[in-house]
Image 1: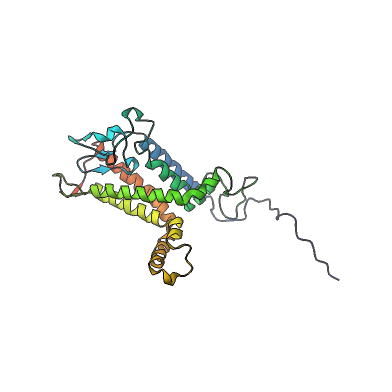
Image 2: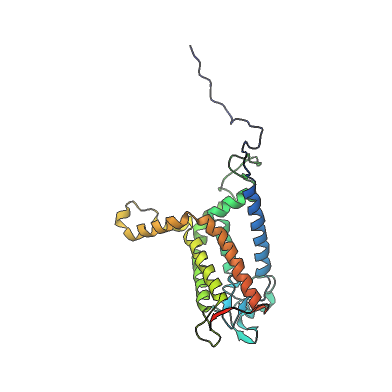
Length: 276
């Protein structure tokens, strides 16, 4: 008569950290380097307090939009003076250097990215090693999930997404203003194209968000009764497949847009004009 063994009371104990033979460390290490470099650059620029606006062509870096410091009211570059404060100011000039000019938008944008599904995967693996890769032993003794502080805040992602949509609208407005010529009329420069490209990529990242996909087509029992929402859900689902790619590309586009505006605003280079 055969006997049935009782199920094991614990998981199989494997001494090796992993049995994988591929270079699984490449992703977390690369991500760690890229994220760290970006955070350092963005932090320095956010608190720099200068070289953020080109009044002649209405180029405003996305790191300072919307601009709320009193300095934004009177910016002079290359003999041209203008205002970057399209929505008013409430920060006195004395706060320069310790409060970002874009004091309202930056915290929400940071929280939107920190709680993003893609970024969770990226920094969980790169900074917390939780775990570093699939099928790799986790160094932490326990994992409580996103049920306790501070990770419970990840559940607020859908609300930060709404804030990101509003800020993307502001960035779109900034890009439209960048179609400004030397004589005050319509014009296009390299800075215009860079700011527009950045906005398009930001919209792709924002609209490909998992929360957006749920808001557009979630909680529907019958798609045939909601054809418009179904079409929108299908479109969002397609770009959602590349959400992680847009998340990384927009880091680069933000730096490119900010760096170009900074170079022109500091009179290091001149804007390459395409029309007027």
